[in-house]
Amino acid sequence: MADELPPLEAEIRRRIAIAGPMSVGQYMTLCLTHPQHGYYMTRDPFGAAGDFTTAPEISQMFGELLGLWAASVWLQMDSPENVRLVELGPGRGSMMLDALRAVQVVAGFRKAVVVHMVEISPVLEQRQRQALTGVDVPVGWHRTLDEVPEGPLIILANEFFDALPVQQAVMCADGWHERVVKVGDDGKLQFSNARDPIPLFEQMLPATVRDAPIGAIFEWRADQTALELGRRIVRANGAALVIDYGHTRSAIGDTLQAVGTHDFADPLLSPGLVDLTAHVDFQALAQAAESMGARTHGPIEQSVLLRRLGIGDRAHALKMAAPHKSAEIDAALARLISEEATGMGRLFKAIGLSYPRLGPLPGF
Image (tube, rainbow, N blue to C red; front, side):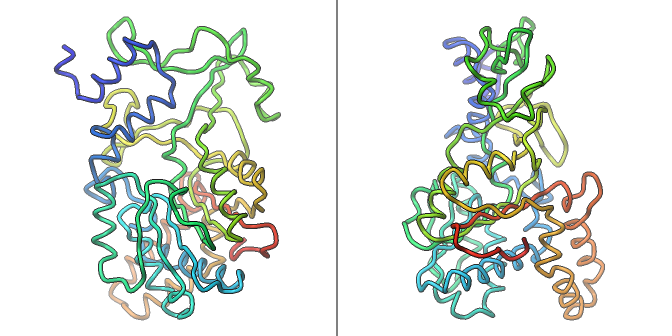
């Protein structure tokens, strides 16, 4: 039976057999970044032929506005001659390509820029290299943010944090227990609770969730990325713009989800073959960055940010230049700023981070 399983599921079952049930965070890490069988290590998941579509793939307007946002921040930073423009999780490279095209109107910024792409996927890195072939700015690739050279920097991160692994805990009668993945009596992977409660866990919880009812689930990210983001921004007198879907205040709730071929899937059914994400806790992200001395701006809804950055004017200009594409441009605009309950403009939030003495960031 085991040799008929997909390779990653067989590996997960082997680890559980040796070490016992694994945490949700460990399971998510293996599913996404296992060197041979992890989801992001083996495929290009974007676009109509993939599993999901992100804002830069919907319209060039998104990347253009973020590029102009970065150029405006650079001016606020007193225009350093050598600035690192960093993108975390750059997808196919579409957003950076659109950003660099837009900032041609700020000649000094384009001359000062060195682009740094932080990417763990060899498949996506190759797509990014193809997309950025011929751009007239230096471009380098790194696996982690801490590999980016020290110095003035501006960081962009769109749909990056949602793919970082989350840990989960479940409120039980005797306290909070870590949520784990195990092999059930029916031979299938299933969620369960660790036998013993997590020591002193309630003292570490945000005050708003300490009275959670039995059965409630709390999620947190144990990685250090938000701390590193805050540290680098303060040391470099820089700034960052993070856009992702999530909630503005820490709250209980199970947001772990799997997506494959543009539809929801069972997170435990096809490990390594579907995308796993969880909502971003913007309050926790802000607190981590602030603990390193960074100043936070927002969070605000994506629709608010894009409107303030001028997406309506940009859409009008594009339609004037290409009237035959007006319907397509209008559809993309509506999708990016939709404020319906599940619309991107409302579900996605934006938060700005900066060193303390930098003034209000554009759009906030």
